[in-house]
Image 1 (cartoon, one colour):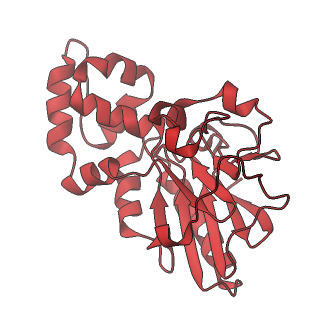
Image 2 (tube, rainbow, N blue to C red):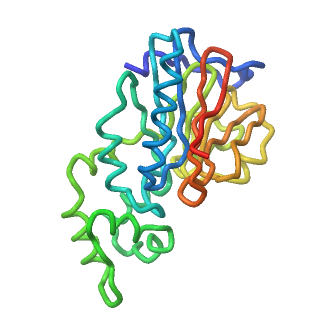
Image 3 (spheres, rainbow, N blue to C red):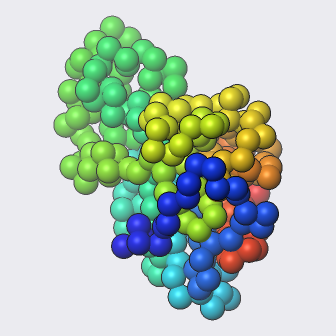
Length: 251
């Protein structure tokens, strides 16, 4: 089990000066995909090729969340993720867009907010349309019927965070000066400025998405791998081996 790799760090324990993943491990974290299966298919051969040059015996592929909305291929993307990636253990983290999909299934009254969030593209990928005059309860029922059970389980079982060696992987970030055990799910999925602007020592280097930029952002306490794939055609991954790090991208 992946969890067996991870030791707990005390809140006061300092982040390492040069973060590392465990020896003999090849770890890749992929940024927010947002329904762009085409970009995953372009990035995967690079990841696979890079791993073949590594002597590492254990390979872990982490997706930092936001699989749906905005891009056109949410359903197709989930189908692909469920197939897995040969040679890799996969960790799928939850993003705020994935959480919104689950909220819509539980409460269709948020439909209008989800529409503004890119939800119509997700519905369309599942063969559901929301035309003018149609109520959101009806759309929710159609979506629930169209959503394969395996997809529903995929979204329900997404993880909030995972730690590997000196790195913590999470969708949005963490609240500074709050232990991991005390972090709220909302912060892990939605936080921005308080985390992004912080120079606090988080104990581990946080690898995250959620806040897109033109290029990966590298700070002493965090690394952002969201390069706005759905609008830039640039999907980015970070490759971690022992104390080294490098980036792969579709740009």
